[in-house]
Image 1 (spheres, rainbow, N blue to C red):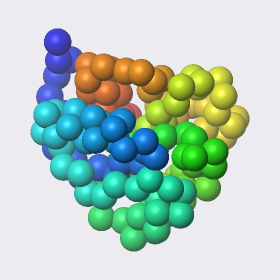
Image 2 (tube, one colour):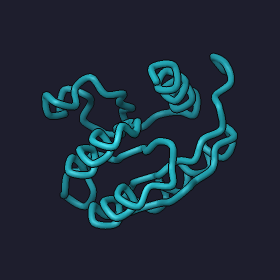
Image 3 (tube, rainbow, N blue to C red):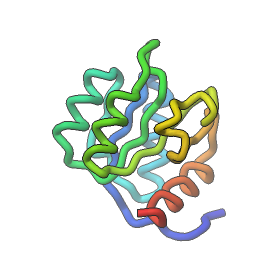
Image 4 (cartoon, rainbow, N blue to C red):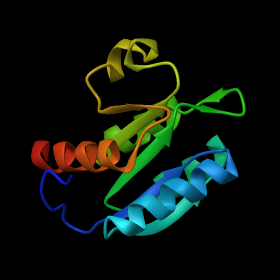
Length: 123
């Protein structure tokens, strides 16, 4: 059940596992959002973060053993909102990012929608 509408946004999706990335993109499309770009590596995500062209980002914390935090720093410096996605929970995040929205894998579309609504309300 929906908590309320979210404003359609252009989203950067960062996820290294193809099937999970595709599922996440489908969930976002079903919620009325547009995928501005997708990245599977930290380098690709860094390039996207610098280039911009999106309203918010969804960041998998661990990309093939490399942590996403340098990209999160770029987004924070640019005042772009983002949500972490992790199998380890928010407690595994560095102190500087502990207050950021976090989705724990696996999650349903309803949890994603709620996180997007919360992120929009905080902006």
